[in-house]
Image (cartoon, rainbow, N blue to C red; front, top):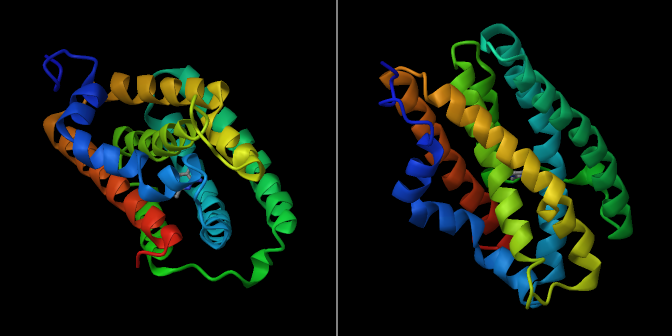
Length: 225
Ligand SMILES: Cc1ncc(CO)c(N)n1
C-alpha cells in the first residue's frame, strides 16, 4: 500500500488545503502592483538585486536536488528535467546581470536583507543529505511554481504591466516555464505517491515554509518590512 492511499495528486490536495496561503504567495500586492501598472520602480529594483542573490544561492540547492535524484530516484527522466533547470539558471544569472545594468544596479554592492537571508538559510537546510529527495523536489517545485503563477498574472489579458517590466514577467510567466513547472509537479506527485507518512509530513511542511518565505520575500520588495 502506498503511503498516500494510492493517490497521485498529493500536490493538488495540498494546494486546495492551503489555498489561502498559496494565493497570498502568488497574488501578492507587489505582483498586483506590477499587473496594474502602479508598481514603484524602486521596489522593482530592490526585488531585482535581492533576487539575484537568491538565484545564486539557488544553484547549490538545485545541485543538491540533482544529486538526491541521482541517488534516490528510480526514474532517469527526473534528472533530465532537473538538468534543464540547471541550464536555465545559468541563463538566468546572465539575464540578471544584463537587467541590473539596464537599471543601473551595482549587483556587487547589494547585501541580502533579512527575508532573503531567511530564505537562503532554508535552501541551505534542504541541501543536507538527511533531507530526502521527495521533500527537496517538492520544495523545488513550490519555489518555481510561485514565480510562474505570480508572473503569468502580469501577462494575462487586462494586465497593465509597464513595458519595461514585461521581459521580467515573461521570464517566469512564459509557457515553457509553465510546462517545466508541470514536469516538476509530476515528479513531486510521483514521489509523494510512494512516500511513507513521515516523508509526506515533511514535504507538506516544506511546501508551507516555501509559501511563507515567498510572502516574506515579496513583502521585503514591496517595502513592508
Ligand atoms: C524568491 C524567488 N523565488 C522563486 C524564484 C524562481 O526561480 C526566484 N527566482 N526567486
